[in-house]
Image 1 (tube, rainbow, N blue to C red):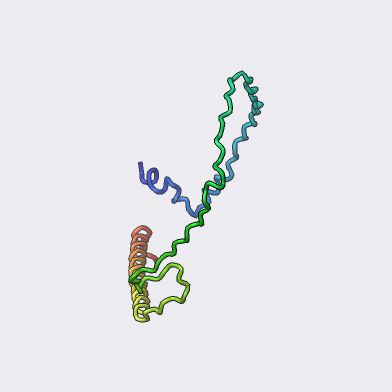
Image 2: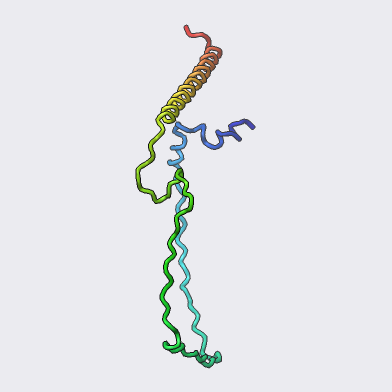
Length: 147
């Protein structure tokens, strides 16, 4: 069994860009099955009232309003500021401006990003040229030199 039967070609990646997946749209669909009629919903009748009835339970009356002294609600507890606040930590609810950026670190980050992009582009170009050289060598070996 070749790689086409078990590899990525079996998953359909070999047909990407070709017309064969579109040909599947031309296959006629089988006729749909007729709808099955549903049975009517039968609700059983309620049971008769032959179950024994319980006597109502007496409930104690609430205490008189004179017996309970009126209490005032407790005073709300206010959060206290920390003893030694850290100036490097800003509260999440702070709405003042952003801190001043360190220009040297921003410029250094941009230079590092440019160097990484240049290096990535150089490696990618080298890999693409090597791949094209392999394709050209295989074409020359298979078809012979161009005249």
